[in-house]
Image 1 (cartoon, rainbow, N blue to C red):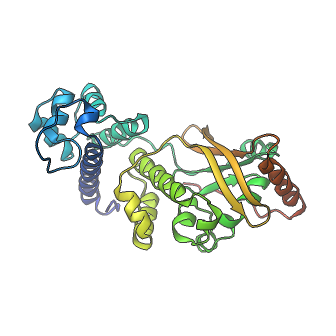
Image 2: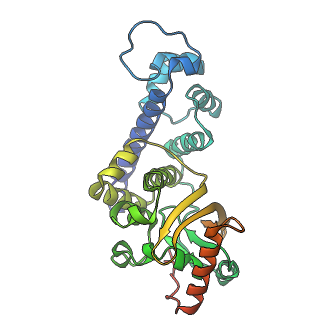
Image 3: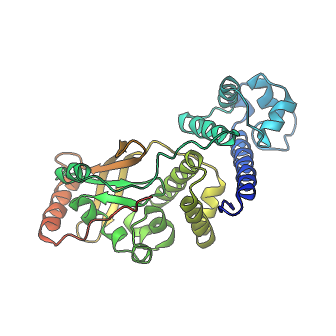
Length: 313
Protein backbone atom coordinates (compact mmCIF):
# COMPACT_ATOMS: atom_id res chain seq x y z
CA UNK A 1 0.00 0.00 0.00
CA UNK A 2 1.19 3.53 -0.74
CA UNK A 3 1.09 5.40 2.55
CA UNK A 4 3.98 7.72 1.88
CA UNK A 5 3.75 11.16 3.49
CA UNK A 6 3.87 12.87 0.09
CA UNK A 7 0.77 11.02 -1.08
CA UNK A 8 -1.63 10.77 1.88
CA UNK A 9 -4.77 10.63 -0.26
CA UNK A 10 -3.38 7.81 -2.39
CA UNK A 11 -2.25 5.97 0.70
CA UNK A 12 -5.69 6.15 2.31
CA UNK A 13 -7.39 5.02 -0.90
CA UNK A 14 -5.02 2.08 -1.22
CA UNK A 15 -5.63 1.12 2.41
CA UNK A 16 -9.39 1.24 1.92
CA UNK A 17 -9.13 -0.94 -1.18
CA UNK A 18 -6.88 -3.37 0.63
CA UNK A 19 -9.25 -3.52 3.58
CA UNK A 20 -12.22 -4.28 1.30
CA UNK A 21 -10.24 -7.07 -0.37
CA UNK A 22 -9.35 -8.57 3.02
CA UNK A 23 -12.99 -8.53 4.12
CA UNK A 24 -14.19 -10.01 0.83
CA UNK A 25 -11.68 -12.85 0.80
CA UNK A 26 -12.04 -13.62 4.49
CA UNK A 27 -15.84 -13.86 4.40
CA UNK A 28 -15.78 -15.83 1.14
CA UNK A 29 -13.31 -18.39 2.49
CA UNK A 30 -15.28 -18.78 5.73
CA UNK A 31 -18.54 -19.20 3.80
CA UNK A 32 -16.92 -21.89 1.65
CA UNK A 33 -16.11 -23.94 4.75
CA UNK A 34 -19.69 -24.19 6.04
CA UNK A 35 -21.85 -26.94 4.57
CA UNK A 36 -25.64 -26.61 4.51
CA UNK A 37 -25.86 -29.66 6.77
CA UNK A 38 -23.61 -28.04 9.34
CA UNK A 39 -25.66 -24.85 9.18
CA UNK A 40 -28.91 -26.80 9.62
CA UNK A 41 -30.23 -25.92 6.15
CA UNK A 42 -32.02 -28.29 3.76
CA UNK A 43 -30.11 -29.38 0.67
CA UNK A 44 -31.44 -30.27 -2.74
CA UNK A 45 -30.02 -30.49 -6.24
CA UNK A 46 -26.48 -29.89 -7.44
CA UNK A 47 -24.59 -27.01 -5.83
CA UNK A 48 -22.23 -24.96 -7.95
CA UNK A 49 -20.27 -23.48 -5.05
CA UNK A 50 -18.57 -25.07 -2.04
CA UNK A 51 -20.16 -24.31 1.27
CA UNK A 52 -23.05 -21.89 1.67
CA UNK A 53 -24.50 -19.52 -0.88
CA UNK A 54 -24.63 -15.83 -0.05
CA UNK A 55 -28.40 -15.90 0.24
CA UNK A 56 -28.16 -18.74 2.76
CA UNK A 57 -25.76 -16.77 4.94
CA UNK A 58 -28.13 -13.81 4.70
CA UNK A 59 -31.05 -15.93 5.93
CA UNK A 60 -29.00 -17.27 8.83
CA UNK A 61 -27.82 -13.76 9.77
CA UNK A 62 -31.29 -12.23 9.44
CA UNK A 63 -30.35 -9.70 6.75
CA UNK A 64 -31.24 -9.28 3.09
CA UNK A 65 -29.24 -10.99 0.39
CA UNK A 66 -28.42 -7.61 -1.15
CA UNK A 67 -27.12 -6.34 2.17
CA UNK A 68 -24.93 -9.39 2.80
CA UNK A 69 -23.62 -9.30 -0.77
CA UNK A 70 -22.57 -5.71 -0.24
CA UNK A 71 -20.90 -6.68 3.04
CA UNK A 72 -18.99 -9.52 1.41
CA UNK A 73 -17.74 -7.08 -1.20
CA UNK A 74 -15.98 -5.26 1.60
CA UNK A 75 -18.41 -2.47 2.43
CA UNK A 76 -18.28 -2.94 6.19
CA UNK A 77 -17.92 0.63 7.41
CA UNK A 78 -20.83 1.65 9.62
CA UNK A 79 -22.09 -1.90 10.18
CA UNK A 80 -23.28 -2.35 13.76
CA UNK A 81 -21.68 -4.80 16.17
CA UNK A 82 -25.00 -6.66 16.46
CA UNK A 83 -25.06 -7.32 12.74
CA UNK A 84 -21.41 -8.37 12.71
CA UNK A 85 -22.20 -10.74 15.55
CA UNK A 86 -25.07 -12.22 13.55
CA UNK A 87 -22.81 -12.75 10.54
CA UNK A 88 -20.13 -14.29 12.75
CA UNK A 89 -22.67 -16.73 14.15
CA UNK A 90 -24.03 -17.57 10.71
CA UNK A 91 -20.52 -18.38 9.48
CA UNK A 92 -19.68 -20.33 12.67
CA UNK A 93 -16.62 -18.14 13.29
CA UNK A 94 -14.49 -19.10 16.27
CA UNK A 95 -13.37 -16.45 18.76
CA UNK A 96 -10.16 -15.63 16.91
CA UNK A 97 -11.99 -15.27 13.59
CA UNK A 98 -14.67 -13.11 15.18
CA UNK A 99 -12.00 -10.83 16.67
CA UNK A 100 -10.35 -10.57 13.26
CA UNK A 101 -13.65 -9.62 11.60
CA UNK A 102 -14.20 -6.87 14.17
CA UNK A 103 -10.62 -5.66 13.63
CA UNK A 104 -11.29 -5.38 9.90
CA UNK A 105 -14.49 -3.47 10.58
CA UNK A 106 -12.65 -1.09 12.93
CA UNK A 107 -9.99 -0.43 10.30
CA UNK A 108 -12.68 0.41 7.73
CA UNK A 109 -14.21 3.20 9.79
CA UNK A 110 -13.47 6.71 8.47
CA UNK A 111 -12.12 7.89 11.80
CA UNK A 112 -8.74 8.79 13.19
CA UNK A 113 -6.29 5.95 13.41
CA UNK A 114 -6.22 4.04 16.67
CA UNK A 115 -2.73 4.27 18.22
CA UNK A 116 -0.77 1.08 17.69
CA UNK A 117 -0.22 -1.23 20.67
CA UNK A 118 2.50 -3.11 18.81
CA UNK A 119 5.03 -0.33 18.35
CA UNK A 120 8.57 -1.54 19.05
CA UNK A 121 10.14 -0.01 22.15
CA UNK A 122 13.18 -0.72 24.27
CA UNK A 123 12.62 -3.68 26.57
CA UNK A 124 12.80 -2.39 30.18
CA UNK A 125 15.45 -4.01 32.44
CA UNK A 126 12.70 -5.37 34.72
CA UNK A 127 11.33 -7.39 31.80
CA UNK A 128 14.75 -8.82 30.98
CA UNK A 129 15.15 -9.73 34.66
CA UNK A 130 11.81 -11.54 34.47
CA UNK A 131 12.98 -13.57 31.47
CA UNK A 132 16.33 -14.41 33.07
CA UNK A 133 14.63 -15.59 36.27
CA UNK A 134 12.98 -18.45 34.36
CA UNK A 135 15.96 -20.77 34.54
CA UNK A 136 14.13 -24.00 33.69
CA UNK A 137 11.92 -22.56 30.95
CA UNK A 138 12.72 -21.08 27.58
CA UNK A 139 11.18 -17.61 27.55
CA UNK A 140 11.26 -14.92 24.89
CA UNK A 141 9.37 -11.84 23.76
CA UNK A 142 8.22 -11.36 20.19
CA UNK A 143 6.27 -8.71 18.39
CA UNK A 144 3.36 -9.33 16.05
CA UNK A 145 5.70 -9.61 13.07
CA UNK A 146 7.34 -12.63 14.80
CA UNK A 147 10.61 -10.79 15.53
CA UNK A 148 12.26 -12.08 18.70
CA UNK A 149 12.71 -8.93 20.79
CA UNK A 150 14.30 -10.35 23.96
CA UNK A 151 15.08 -13.78 25.40
CA UNK A 152 16.63 -15.67 28.28
CA UNK A 153 19.72 -17.90 27.91
CA UNK A 154 17.72 -21.10 27.56
CA UNK A 155 15.59 -19.60 24.77
CA UNK A 156 18.79 -18.68 22.93
CA UNK A 157 20.10 -22.22 23.34
CA UNK A 158 16.80 -23.94 22.50
CA UNK A 159 16.23 -21.82 19.41
CA UNK A 160 19.87 -21.80 18.30
CA UNK A 161 18.90 -22.95 14.77
CA UNK A 162 16.69 -19.85 14.46
CA UNK A 163 19.27 -17.42 15.86
CA UNK A 164 22.09 -18.94 13.77
CA UNK A 165 20.04 -19.07 10.56
CA UNK A 166 21.07 -17.02 7.50
CA UNK A 167 17.61 -15.46 7.70
CA UNK A 168 18.70 -13.94 11.02
CA UNK A 169 22.22 -12.88 10.06
CA UNK A 170 20.96 -11.25 6.87
CA UNK A 171 18.37 -9.10 8.67
CA UNK A 172 20.06 -8.55 12.02
CA UNK A 173 17.20 -10.00 14.06
CA UNK A 174 15.72 -13.45 14.52
CA UNK A 175 12.30 -13.70 12.91
CA UNK A 176 10.35 -16.92 13.33
CA UNK A 177 8.29 -16.47 10.16
CA UNK A 178 11.35 -15.91 7.97
CA UNK A 179 13.06 -18.93 9.49
CA UNK A 180 10.08 -21.23 8.99
CA UNK A 181 9.33 -20.26 5.40
CA UNK A 182 12.75 -19.31 4.02
CA UNK A 183 15.28 -21.60 5.74
CA UNK A 184 15.12 -25.26 4.63
CA UNK A 185 16.66 -26.26 7.98
CA UNK A 186 13.36 -25.32 9.65
CA UNK A 187 11.81 -28.51 8.28
CA UNK A 188 14.09 -30.51 10.54
CA UNK A 189 14.01 -28.25 13.62
CA UNK A 190 10.20 -28.11 13.66
CA UNK A 191 9.20 -31.78 13.60
CA UNK A 192 5.61 -30.80 12.73
CA UNK A 193 6.66 -28.21 10.18
CA UNK A 194 3.31 -28.12 8.36
CA UNK A 195 1.51 -27.19 11.58
CA UNK A 196 4.15 -24.59 12.46
CA UNK A 197 3.86 -23.01 9.01
CA UNK A 198 0.06 -22.85 9.15
CA UNK A 199 0.08 -21.39 12.67
CA UNK A 200 2.70 -18.77 11.82
CA UNK A 201 0.84 -17.55 8.73
CA UNK A 202 -2.38 -17.41 10.76
CA UNK A 203 -0.66 -15.37 13.49
CA UNK A 204 0.61 -12.90 10.89
CA UNK A 205 -2.89 -12.70 9.37
CA UNK A 206 -4.36 -11.81 12.77
CA UNK A 207 -1.67 -9.18 13.31
CA UNK A 208 -2.48 -7.65 9.92
CA UNK A 209 -6.06 -7.23 11.13
CA UNK A 210 -4.95 -5.62 14.40
CA UNK A 211 -2.32 -3.38 12.81
CA UNK A 212 -3.45 -2.53 9.26
CA UNK A 213 -1.05 0.44 9.04
CA UNK A 214 2.12 -1.49 9.94
CA UNK A 215 4.35 -0.97 6.90
CA UNK A 216 7.06 -3.32 8.20
CA UNK A 217 4.46 -6.08 8.49
CA UNK A 218 3.26 -5.49 4.93
CA UNK A 219 6.84 -5.62 3.71
CA UNK A 220 7.42 -8.90 5.55
CA UNK A 221 4.27 -10.43 4.07
CA UNK A 222 5.36 -9.24 0.63
CA UNK A 223 8.81 -10.75 1.08
CA UNK A 224 7.45 -14.11 2.22
CA UNK A 225 4.82 -14.14 -0.53
CA UNK A 226 7.50 -13.53 -3.15
CA UNK A 227 9.99 -16.10 -1.89
CA UNK A 228 7.82 -18.88 -0.46
CA UNK A 229 5.09 -20.67 -2.45
CA UNK A 230 3.97 -22.37 0.77
CA UNK A 231 3.50 -19.01 2.49
CA UNK A 232 1.48 -17.73 -0.49
CA UNK A 233 -0.80 -20.75 -0.17
CA UNK A 234 -1.21 -20.34 3.58
CA UNK A 235 -1.82 -16.59 3.29
CA UNK A 236 -4.48 -17.13 0.66
CA UNK A 237 -6.35 -19.46 3.03
CA UNK A 238 -7.13 -16.45 5.30
CA UNK A 239 -6.85 -18.56 8.43
CA UNK A 240 -6.53 -16.59 11.66
CA UNK A 241 -4.91 -17.42 14.97
CA UNK A 242 -4.59 -15.20 18.03
CA UNK A 243 -4.20 -17.64 20.93
CA UNK A 244 -0.97 -19.59 20.69
CA UNK A 245 -0.41 -22.57 22.96
CA UNK A 246 -0.09 -26.32 22.84
CA UNK A 247 2.57 -28.98 22.25
CA UNK A 248 5.67 -28.35 20.16
CA UNK A 249 7.98 -31.09 18.93
CA UNK A 250 11.50 -29.95 18.09
CA UNK A 251 14.69 -31.64 16.94
CA UNK A 252 17.68 -29.90 18.49
CA UNK A 253 21.16 -30.53 17.03
CA UNK A 254 22.71 -30.85 20.52
CA UNK A 255 20.13 -32.79 22.53
CA UNK A 256 17.88 -34.44 19.95
CA UNK A 257 14.11 -34.79 20.12
CA UNK A 258 12.11 -32.58 22.47
CA UNK A 259 8.40 -32.50 23.19
CA UNK A 260 7.55 -29.26 24.98
CA UNK A 261 4.46 -27.43 26.08
CA UNK A 262 4.26 -23.77 25.18
CA UNK A 263 2.07 -20.85 26.15
CA UNK A 264 1.94 -17.29 24.85
CA UNK A 265 0.72 -14.39 26.97
CA UNK A 266 0.29 -10.70 26.32
CA UNK A 267 2.94 -8.75 28.21
CA UNK A 268 2.55 -4.95 28.31
CA UNK A 269 5.98 -3.31 28.44
CA UNK A 270 4.68 0.28 28.28
CA UNK A 271 1.38 2.13 28.09
CA UNK A 272 1.46 1.80 24.31
CA UNK A 273 3.24 -1.48 23.69
CA UNK A 274 2.27 -5.12 24.18
CA UNK A 275 4.58 -7.99 23.27
CA UNK A 276 3.91 -11.73 23.29
CA UNK A 277 5.69 -13.61 26.06
CA UNK A 278 6.21 -17.20 24.90
CA UNK A 279 7.30 -19.86 27.39
CA UNK A 280 8.44 -23.39 26.56
CA UNK A 281 8.72 -26.02 29.29
CA UNK A 282 8.74 -29.81 29.60
CA UNK A 283 6.60 -32.27 31.51
CA UNK A 284 8.18 -33.04 34.89
CA UNK A 285 10.01 -36.36 34.92
CA UNK A 286 9.97 -36.72 31.14
CA UNK A 287 12.90 -37.39 28.82
CA UNK A 288 12.33 -33.95 27.35
CA UNK A 289 12.79 -32.38 30.79
CA UNK A 290 16.15 -34.15 31.17
CA UNK A 291 17.22 -32.92 27.76
CA UNK A 292 16.04 -29.42 28.54
CA UNK A 293 18.12 -29.52 31.75
CA UNK A 294 21.12 -30.59 29.67
CA UNK A 295 20.52 -27.69 27.31
CA UNK A 296 20.30 -25.38 30.33
CA UNK A 297 23.70 -26.59 31.51
CA UNK A 298 25.19 -26.14 28.06
CA UNK A 299 23.76 -22.62 27.86
CA UNK A 300 25.29 -21.74 31.24
CA UNK A 301 28.79 -22.72 30.08
CA UNK A 302 28.67 -20.86 26.78
CA UNK A 303 29.25 -17.10 26.36
CA UNK A 304 25.98 -15.29 25.80
CA UNK A 305 25.35 -13.42 22.60
CA UNK A 306 24.62 -9.74 22.78
CA UNK A 307 21.07 -9.09 23.89
CA UNK A 308 18.75 -7.99 21.08
CA UNK A 309 17.94 -4.30 21.26
CA UNK A 310 14.54 -3.09 20.12
CA UNK A 311 14.35 -0.17 17.76
CA UNK A 312 12.77 2.96 19.10
CA UNK A 313 9.91 4.36 17.07
